Image 1 (spheres, rainbow, N blue to C red):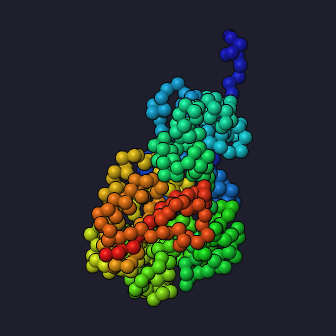
Image 2 (cartoon, rainbow, N blue to C red; image 1 turned 30 degrees about the vertical axis):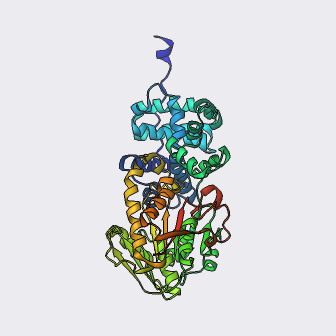
Image 3 (cartoon, rainbow, N blue to C red; image 1 turned 90 degrees about the vertical axis):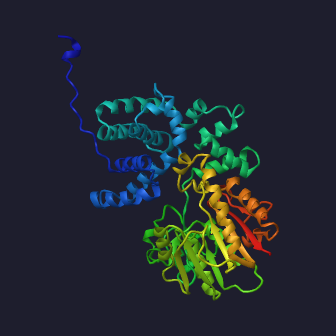
Length: 473
């Protein structure tokens, strides 16, 4: 009998079922398989985990770790793919997606968190044994041990091409953005290397939760009494929840008197509401109102002036969200489900019109990191006709002397300035851009105007774009 056959076998160890990593894996599978968004998938999974495990076993720190694992993995997916590709002997497309999700979660723990190496590898292998089986868990173990040989900076030196040889590809790997997105953002931002690196890095940071105190229904003073709450940077109605504050724990949010709304979104609505007008100021329109954040602010501001907001949204279920957001508004308003390209209202019926058009969402990559991997350059061609049609509707819907706000949560030039320039040419001098910068009082770095582009790294907001246009004839 050989020495090897006499050696006692290791007893079988049942894998530890870790609820935090199981939850993170389920969220990633939903994002991958169903094209779900993490911000919609994660909350119900967290609630289910609390109910199943109990609050004593699934604590707030467990929820925070699960959230970090999901969002961190999605944000860094491009970088981790490059690292994993260097550690396997086959193209990534030949690795089963569930295996790749486990590897990516493990890579994030090793390279993007302070979890000790042995704990990150052990927990990931246990997860693989539970969800993939012992055979594929051995593959996961081997790959993660290779990844653990270097830290993130060491891997970037190995997998990212030198900046001098290919700047865009270097930035794409280092900052985990598709190359075409890097190129588009750089074109819109302009400038040299420092600015684009700061922007891409900001896209990979976890954004603070920003609340809005809806005028006439809540005050910032009330919200600031919440734990970890600090005043907003720019909007008089904004309050930020630092240190991962939970908006659902705020009474005013639960009651609908306050809401979650990025400060850039607030600034867009405020700029339109404060643009100078000649003549009446009684009828306002939000032509793409879903899911209702800007509409709720506009309706409250309109009520303070004796004006009425019409909030229109094409999708009935989103119109329902708008109605929910506006419920309790201190003045009159109306919510309808209507196609903004074929409006039921008469031309020239409004004094102020906001058209926050559908877009690629490249301005909100901090909040929806998976969007960067889903979007393709050809998506721009799909949005372009709709964006132009909606802006034309807005200009036709406002009276002479009235103001239109064209907004989009994308900094891509094809969705911002190019759309505005094309539509203004069609109107042949019947509408002119007005300078939006003075209406964002105190906000620095707004460029040469007259339109405004906000940036995560400069303003701490989503990359919202706004052009204000006055109908002149």
